[in-house]
Length: 640
Image (tube, rainbow, N blue to C red; front, top):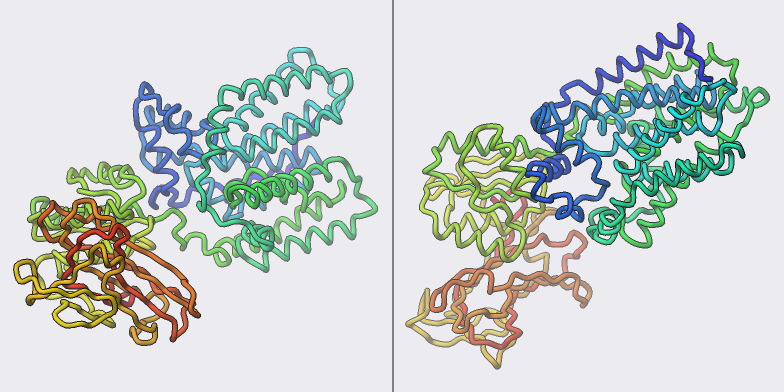
C-alpha cells in the first residue's frame, strides 16, 4: 500500500507543484502556435465526414489519439491558443504529482520529492507542457500506466475485494491503451513495461495479466494500418541523424543547458549512493528505471541510424521521468530529512538553471507565424486592400489563414508557397499581372529561396517596409519610392552585343533583340549556352551568407523546353554543388519573352581560388533565344 506523504513532504511537494504550475501558465498563450500545433489544428478543422482520419494519417507522425481529442475539444471550447494548450498544461502539472507517486512507490518519499522537483523545473518538461502536442500526454499516460502496473504486478499485501482488484486491472488497461494511442515512444515504453511484468507477476495472476496485455495490443489493431503507413512514410531528412554526442547533448538539455545544475544533480546522486550504500535496499526497480530509459533511447537511436531519423528531444520525453527517478533512487529509506534539505537547496539551482541557463522565457520556442500574420494584416489595413497584393511563403496555407481569421482579415494571399520551380514561376507571373502599387511578401520558417524577393523586386523595385521575425519576415515592395535597397557587391551584365563569356553563339536578329541588335542562340549544335566563370575571390564576397543571383531573358521557339539556368561551384577541380531552375515553369505563351531567375548561397567552405559558374544548359538541344543575362552577388543583408 502506498502511504500518504508526511506533512513536511506534502508542504514541499505542494510548493513544487505550485511553482511548476506558475512556470507553465506564465504567458502560455501569448506566443505563436508552433507549425506542429497548427498542423494538428488544420487536421481537426474539417468535418468528421471528410474522413480526415483515413486521408491524412501519413502526414502525422504520432498515433491519432491527440487529434481525435482536439477534434472534440475545439468544437466545444474553440481553437484559440489559450484553449487548445490548456488541457496539456494541466496534464504537464499532473505529471509532477505522478512522478512523485511513482518514485515514492518504487523507492521512498525522498526520491519522489527530488524527481518531482526535476520534473517541475526542467525547461524540457515546461516547454512541452505549454504546447498542444502529444508528447506531454504520452509522458502522462506512461506514468499513469506505470503506477497501476506497479499495483498490479507488485501488490503490497493489501486485502482487496474482487471489485477493487478489477478496478486496478481496468485502470491499468485503460491507461496503457491511452499511452499506445497517444505517442509511439509511450507505446514502446508501456510495451516494455508489460513484457517486464511477465517475469514478475505472481503465478496465480499470470492468466489475468496476460489477458490485460492481449486486450491492449488487440485494441490497438484498428490503428495498426495507420501506424505502418506512418513508419513507411517518415519524411527523409526531417531530422538529423544521431551522432556519438547525442546522449550527452540530450542529458545536458534535460538540465536546462546548465552545467552547474547538471553536475549538481549528479553530485547529489553520487553522494547519496556513496554514503547510503550500506543502507540502500537494491530492488528490481533500480534496474527497471535505468533499463527502460536506456532501452527506449537505444531503440530510437538504432532506428534513426539504420532507417530514418526519429530521435529528438520530443520523442524522448515519455522516457524522461525514468531517468530522473533513477538519479534519485539511491537515497536510503531513512534519509527523509536529508532529502527535504536537498530539495530546498536544489530549488534555487533549478530555477536559476531555468531562467539563466536555458533562458527559457527569452527564447522563441514556437516560431513567429502569429507575429508574421499579424504584421501582414496590419500592413494590409494600412495600405488598404485594393492597393496591395500579398504572397505568403508558408508550409501550409492554414498557418496564415488561421491567424488572419483571428484578426478578421479577409484578404487572402495570392500564393502560399514559393519554394519549388513551379511556385516561383507562378510568383513571377503574379508579379507581372497584378496592378497594385504595393506588394507584400511574407515568409515563415519554411525555406525561403532568395529568388522570391528578387522576382518581386523586378516589378516592385522599392522597399517601403521590412521586418524580421526570427527565421521569417515581411517585406513591402512598391513600384515607386526612394529606397531601392543596397546595391549588389558584384554585378556583370551581358546583352550579347559583343563576345563576353564562354560558349556564346551570338547572332544578329534586330526583330527579336531586346537591347541592341544581337541575341544568343542555343540549338541542336549547342547543348550549353553562354557561361560566366569567375573565382570566388573576384566576386566581392560579403561574409558567410553571400548569395549569387543569375537571370536571363528567353524566347522559346518550342514550347516546353528542357533548358535550365544553372549555378555550379567547383572546388579543387571537382564539382562541389550544382543548382538550377527549369525554364519551363517560367515560360510564357509561345512568341513572348520571359525571364528565368535562380540564386544560391555561395558555400562557406569554398576557397578564394575555387570556381563559380553560371550557364544555360539545353539538354534537349532545342532552339532557344537568350537576351540580357545578368549575374549579381549580394550580401544577405542587402538581398532585399
